Length: 136
Image 1 (cartoon, helix red, strand yellow):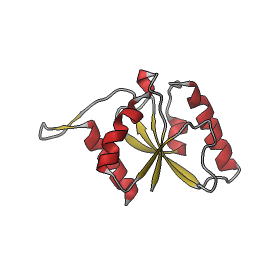
Image 2 (cartoon, rainbow, N blue to C red):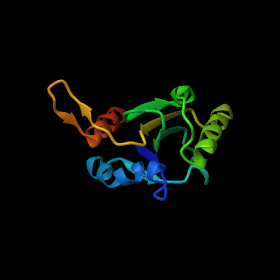
Image 3 (cartoon, one colour):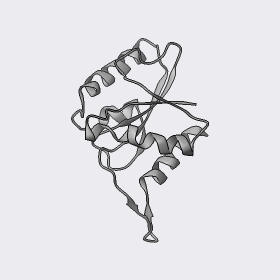
Image 4 (cartoon, one colour):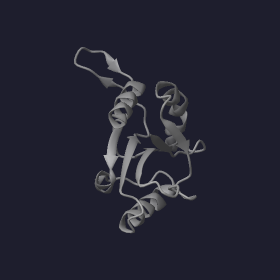
């Protein structure tokens, strides 16, 4: 499985996917994480089902989103690529260059979830669960 990772280390609010990457690679050694720029030759030729790890403004916890979920999130773009990415993905789907898109969305603010037994579920625990679901 391949997961395309977007982010920008120069923008604090868009850097989290890249900062989490070393830990994700250790947790999931069989998954190929590919850091790329969505505006440069993306997706690679022949890739029809995409999984993307990116910051999504307007969500409160990590979640798996498909293209229809993204259209319903009311938020403003974090960086200029956000404008282009949505348009680019819409165009690729219309042209039947890709079949589907799953985005592992990370909020631009790190949080922990308080569980019923008052233990905290860390951010990496949340990410592990999402990626594990996609990997099955």
